Image: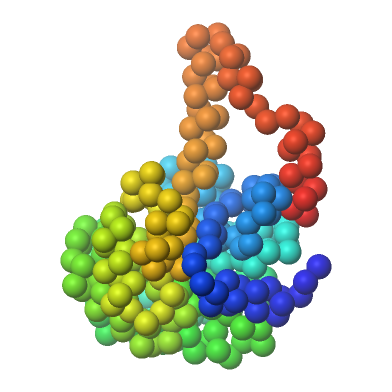
Length: 275
């Protein structure tokens, strides 16, 4: 089993090589091992997937729950793990940056800090505070005994502020504050991806949730994306299948969905391969 420093080195190398890599989002040890068994090279946690697993209709999770989930996923495989830390569960920069230290102690080699306040009425931190929060997160990351990559997220596009100019201004400032990766969820087209990539000096993460599903990894790589995540989409797909089967049983008395199950041996082989 590689140690955390080896995972950190491998994670950084993924961002430095040509092209793009997919970093899928498991929500527990089993889904992490299945993705590792399929051959992915790194994993990212999903707070939405965790909230779904915990049965939270408001999709909220606590810092303690996120860190515990991070530890479970980091220990499940030998892959590098990037943790979704939302707004780092605090407003003040130093308090927010504490989540970076906790994520590293839980085994992660990367994590995100976003500028969404958590309040839909006042959704985005003021520019200066948002930059100060990234600076504090980077300072803690640089002080850790194991390298830790900080991803800074500009949330405008999915929080009711469809302002590409301000989004790019924020991404540029976050890069200037030391963020290793920048990220603007809500990009919808390849042209928007190219626009963001061309405007910043750091690797860009693109999440697929708002893109046309027919857009491919090769197209995103050609547009300049370096890292591609799927957020809570795999959790939502799994739950859609689960709900569909439940409805078929309840409303139609049907078990036809069983034809689509993965075989037990295939499942066991993937879990073993991902261990």
